[in-house]
Image 1 (cartoon, rainbow, N blue to C red):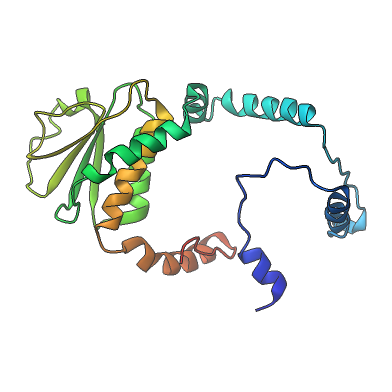
Image 2: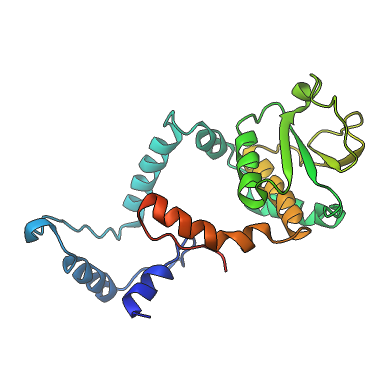
Length: 232
């Protein structure tokens, strides 16, 4: 494969960095590569600014984050960013509950009960189910209060009710209650919920992996660009 194309396809977003300054020679080399990028009519109208002052970088990063948090288009990001939950505590809680998760293979439908105060997490969970399972496994997701209103009229012995942060003693024949730590907010619920959904994926056939290549080929034609699967 062409090395340039291979580099583009194997590019990954880096989300963690070493606490170490980058050598000036490397910065200059990166800028020089940027200069060689094509521009309309070769006008080369770009400008490059390399920030190395840590305090200035932090100030700029804070301003950008504030704009994202206060953007009305992204209420979920705003709510989650304000919680300032400790990722280490979230991971510790997941490690505490992971061995108590039941085998999900015998269920064909799942009903997720979420706390009232986190309504926007519902779309996140439903979207993840759509991506991973399509029509092969079904999912409903409502709060405990909403579940009281004719959501459980038709029972099924292959449906599992998964309740987050609230002990469900009423709804469904099959129940699994997922405890949440004290003070849990959006980040904790999202992480714990995605972990549980991941266990459902683990205990069932690899629907996503089996179909993702064919999907990306069709999506490439639909969007007019080459889309590659992010998993192999």
